[in-house]
Structures are given as structure tokens and as C-alpha cells.
Image (cartoon, rainbow, N blue to C red):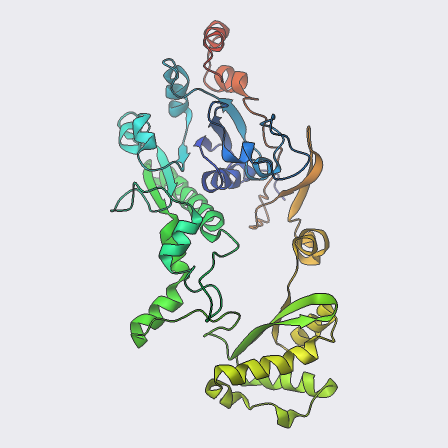
Length: 408
């Protein structure tokens, strides 16, 4: 097995912010790209100031687990982007870089003179990727937003919740955590295109449109039936029968039935321990059950699952070719889940301020060129290295820029 990484030799200038851009460049860095993250204590990234755990402090910018997770394997260059001499560092880095990544509100990079049309005039082969809520064009482009904005406009929020209750915000920021994989994949494709053609390109990624893509089934249904679908709680239009049911010790399990064979297998499992098969509807009749009748059926299933140990029940159902999954809490997931442990989901690194804790590894496993997750940097940790080693700045120039407070 080769010890090389797939993106070794790729050079990335990273203006990422918060989650979307940071996760994009984390993926590139973990797979071997040399990523220089440009940041400043004058306007630190949200992930450097969001105190989510008791071991972090308000005073430090280097003790936030969120930042560590999403900025592994990078170099940190601390720069005041409004300093009159900042271009003495930025321009050589643009000469050095293969890729520029940013996820500010549209228009921000233009104000800094770092938008794609401007950069391209001096660097026609540059690859640039911008991630934003709505994309760089269109009537909403300049509007500010977050994942919840995209979820609401995309209809995802409308489809989340119970039929007789208000829509709710999905608990997971789907757009925030999925868009970076689109962006990183597009960058990898652009790098290969550049290798074969010498041409760069601009990648415009929209979180809103990623959220809309998730709604494709509901959109198609609405177009065909001319009646918009409505939220169904734990049920699903794509399943013959589905629900989340209680188990022993106040735990839960999700069960999905997609065909008649699986339905009969579920009925057989229940009947062995609980009820006569005659008490259950035939699979072909499930579509005819009214909501009150489905509630009664849910109660029957819940009466059976409520006496079962959740993991044993999951194994029983899966053995009978039924889709079933324990509703795990976060501790179950990262401490006890054997599948994630087998695939090395977390790599333990010794953080200088937080001590040892697991850092997320990419969910894509490459057999010959695996990822290599390294510690995230402290703020400005690599200023001297970037300036002197990467762009060849002399000691005198570096010291003068430092004395003029560029590296803050």
C-alpha cells in the first residue's frame, strides 16, 4: 500500500468561514493538499469563538473542538485583510495556489479584489470555488442566510414534523454538512481537468439547491399528482409501512417495510411472541388504512417492541430482511457503534489545550491513498513558515510587516 495521499502537491488558499468552507478544505487537507487558511483575530471564525464545551474558554481562540474538527491538517496564516500591505502576502500566495476556496456572502471577495474575474486576469488557470446559501447569481444571491434558510425555502422544513402540528427545523443542518462534499468533489474534478488541459475554472455551489435536490421525490410527486405532499411524522410515502417505536428502558427503534415479503416477516416475528396473525392486516390492504387505523397498527407494533431490548430487536429484524435501526444517542454513536469503530471514524489526536479526543476522519476510504488527519492549527501558527518558506519572503520584509501589525 502506498503511503502517498491523493492530493499531494495540490496547493489551496483557503478563505473559509464557519462550517461549509472549512469542511471543504478539511477534506482537501486530510487527503494531502497543502491548505493555507487565511484568518484574523480581528474577525475570528465562528468556530473559534463558539464555546460549546466546559473545557473551552471565552478568552482563547485555540481551544474550541468545533474548530479543531473542521480545520484539521491545515496551516494558519493570520492576516489583517484590510491592511494596506496585505497584498505583499496575498499576491505571492495567488501565484503559489492551484485552488482558492471561500464561502463568504456573495460580494465580499469582490470588495477585497479577490473575486474570480479579478484573480483570473493574472492567474487564468486558477480553480476557485465559492459556497453560499443561494449561489452567486439570481435574485436571492446577495441575501444572507444559513442552513435553516435553505431548509425553509426548499420545502424541507415544511415536510418535517407531524401532520397536525407546525413545520419544524430539521435537527441536522443538512446543507451545511453535505454541500462541502459537493464542493470538494468538484475541486477534485477541476484539478484533474486542469492536469489534462491546463485550464482553470470557477465552481459556484449553492446550499439552497442542494436542499432542493433532497426534495426531489416530493417535487416529482407534486408535479405528477398536482397536489403538494404534506408532512407525515415518522411515516413515509416510499415505504409500505414505517414508524419509530418504543423499546425497553425508554429506547427506540426505526422500522421500514418496503414490500409484502418484509411485511409478512414482521407479522411472523410479532406473532411468535405476541399476537395472532389474523389480528394484522394483509400487506395489500395497508394502502387502504386510514390515519386512525394506522395509529391503531402503530399501537400494536409498539406493544410488541416495548418489551424488546433494542439491539437484539434490530438484529432479529435485520436477520429477517427488514430495514431496522436503533435510535442511537450521540454517546451510542461515537463511543459504542462497532461499524464506525471498525472504519476508524474518529482519529485520536493530542490537542495542546484540550488533550486527547477523537477527530472526524473523511467518510470516504481510499485503499491505496488513505487520508491522514492531523491537528488543526493555532491562530497564526504558520505565519513565518508561509511567508518565508512558501512565498520566499526575506526576514527583513517579514519583520517589517509584523511590526506594522499585518499578522493580527
